[in-house]
Amino acid sequence: MPDIIQLLPDSVANQIAAGEVIQRPASVVKELVENAIDAGATSVTINIKDSGRTLIQVIDNGKGMSPTDARMSFERHATSKIREANDLFAIRTMGFRGEALASIAGVADVELRTRPHGAELGTYIHILGSSIQKQEADHCAEGTNFSVKNIFFNIPARRKFLKSNSSELKYIITEIQRVALANPELAISLYHNNSVIYNIPSENIRKRIVSLFGKGINQNLIPVDTTTTVINISGFIGQPRSARKTLGEQFFFVNGRFMKHPFFNRAVQQAYDRILPPETFPSYFLYFEVDPATIDINIHPTKTEIKFEDERSAWHIIQASVREAMGKFNLMPSIDFDQGGAIDIPISPLRGSEIPEPEIRINPNFNPFEKDRGGERSYSDLTSYRDEQNRDNWQSLYRGFEREGDPNYPTTVGNSDFSEEREKQDAVQQEFKNEGISVENHNFLQLKNKYILTPVKSGLMVIDQRRAHERILYENFLRIIDNHLAISQRQLFPARIELNAVDQEILVVLDDELKALGFEIRPGEEGIYYVEGIPALLSHLNASDLVIKLIEDFKNRPVDVKEEIKEHIALLLSQSSAINYGVSLKNEEILELFNLLFACNTPNYSPSGKTIVSIVSSSEFEKLLK
Image (cartoon, rainbow, N blue to C red):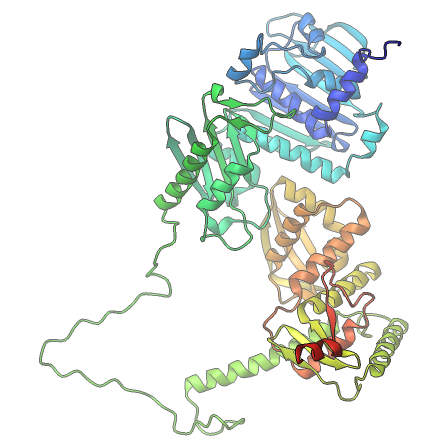
């Protein structure tokens, strides 16, 4: 039998290793910047073009490499960090396995220029797909300069699976944030297509957090400082009021290395138990110092997952530290007697003195059964009457909101579109007339201000009012975006929002669709934006909260195709502005909601895929009454 097992060529082995270590351009940035840190660099500059597809350049002022070291650095498992297996449990450097540069060189066009401090000449090496093209002496600056071009040029399938430029840039910024937080003494500059994203000097941890996530976060940071024999914890946690509905500002660092640890994340979450709004996540930037012998950082190719020898003890220490920090700043639940103004406690009168009887003011002309209240009214009567009028006016405003924002009406679309939509509604009415519903006399019942019930020939139709409204608004928003029919409501006082680098890039991605919907957002000074206009449909909502919610929700479901972006924005807006449960609707409003729903293309399901309409058959009722 012939031998069939053989050694893989180095080029193929490097490409396989790259599948684990180099997943996208952000992985290249991470590995090169970590190498610069290990080389003792105090300043790193990263130049990115086309989100890393075309160029990733990392320049540092570290100690540089000799010609031999420069050549050896591209060999597999060539490292200066370890000599034997026991060294794996005493590692304090970022890289140690010697896979990164070999993997990068296997899938890209790499140029290296490096010169040690004090040397007259440096070294230039050009490697293309693991094949050395050139090595020669070079007049270059002290330190190291890596240029990685055309990543995955020799693996088209891997390059095809890269996401959009905006998504890949977001991953790069995230990696830079992790490195910058772990090394606040490192000055970092990040450029994308010659535009500055970060230009951060050497600073302390608190200032570094503010530089990365905006000045607004500074007032929400609570210091944490705990020293134990198992683990030392320092850093900051966020106040409950700053919690967000999406993940993104949660960072663990162990001995200067970023890590992901769901088990420890639950410890922090439970420390905030019962003081956070529902479905929100607190911010935290926690730094752990432990004995390297008690952790294993070699369990994942990207070294982001770390195993602790005594995870349970560390878990309890983390939770206790977070609770202690909140307790020091009076953030734990307590009875607050200052809320709602001061309490006036009268001084007790002298014994034997007469206590005056309290006076009760009444309105003798008040008649609770009189609709048009005449005569003299007290302030409380006038207030309750005005509230009742406001509620009625609000309902009228709601109906106008429905009609104004619906492209079925001639105020927003042409007459031909209007007639087509009206014909569709007439056809729907005719269909339900056959089911036993009279167009002139609809029989509707609103159950618990949540469901709309109406009889049909086959039984009882049940409609979820919020989901129905979401479907109506969703299709309206899609038509508005497609036909550019949006009307913008200018803000008298533009809302001011502060965005970090990741959020700014997301806003750039959403810019065209937001403008098509009627948003007008103007950039101001660094990281500050002003919302000068929002869709007239949403004028009743808070402008800044709406834009921030769109950005936060977009982080949870990033999409690349433009059509999907349009649909996602329409979905988020419909969910944000749909009528809530618990709102009582008049019969005319229910009828309008009913007609608009069944004029939709997909009336049975909400935009998120939940059931809107269900029919309980007559036979099911008969079974219940047997």
